[in-house]
Length: 329
Image (cartoon, rainbow, N blue to C red; front, side, top):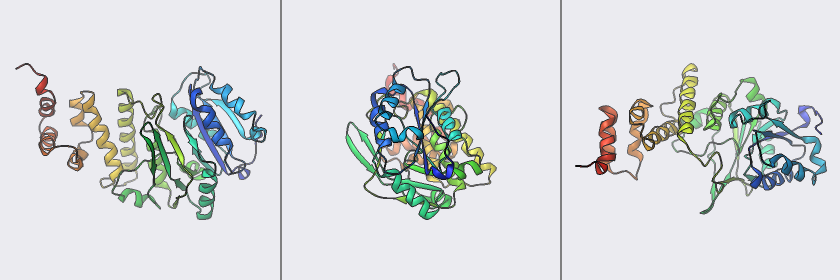
C-alpha cells in the first residue's frame, strides 16, 4: 500500500495515534484526507485498539484512492498491546519523512486549508515551528484560541501569560527534531507534548504564526479522551515530566525562574496534589512556585496566607484548614 517516497517529495507528515477511537475516527480521517496540501504522509499508529478503529480508517481510505500511497498504519508495540501515547507518538516520529511533522489526536478534526496555510508560512519564513490557531469544542460551545507570536526561546521564556502549548496546532521542522535528538520522555503519557515542545522551542531560533479562518479543532466533548480524564497516575507523570524538564534546562545552564508558563505548569501540578490528599508531597514538590497562589483571584487572602504558612512551616496547617469542618469537635 505504501510507496517509499523521498523526503523532499513529502511536505508534511501527520502522525495520528489511535486507541479504540471508532466513535470519532471517521470524522478525523476524512478531515485529514480532505486537506488541500498535496502529498501529505499520514502515519496512523495503532496503540493496541480492540475495536474497529483500523477498519474505519481503511474504509475511509477506500473513498480516497489517491491517498493510498501516502498512508501507513503501524502498531506502537510489536505485541499489539497498548504502549501509551508517548510511545505511539515516538513510533510515528521515528518513521516520519516529511519536511515538517505534526500530530492529530484521533478524536479531533482539522479545517481543510489548515496544513497548507501553516506549511506555506513555514517554508516562506524558514521556520522551525509554525503555530496555528485552534478551537476548543465542548458541551458549552466553541471557543477560539489565538496563539501568541513567539519567535524564539527568549520570547517564550519571557512571555507573562499561560497559553495552550500543544503539538497538534503546530508544524515542526523534522530536521530540527532529528539534529537535536529530541524524543518523547519514556513512559510519560501525560503532558508529554509539553515536555517535547519546551525542548523544541529551546532549540528553535526562528518560529512563525498563522492567524486565519482555518483551525485545528480540539474535541473536549469526548469524556474518554486522554486529554480530558485526569488520574493520580497522570498527575505523577506530569510531575516527572516537569522534573525532567528542570534537569534539561539546568544541563543547558538555562534560567527558567521567570518563565511563566513553566512555573504555572509546576504550580498547577503542585496544587493538584491537594485534590488527592498528598499534603506532605505538596510541600516538597516545586517549592519555588508556591507564591503563584497570590495570582489566583478565586482564592481569599486568608487562604493565601494559610497556603504560605503551610509551605514555610508545615503542611498540616493547610490540611487542618481543608478538614476542620469535617472533624468531630
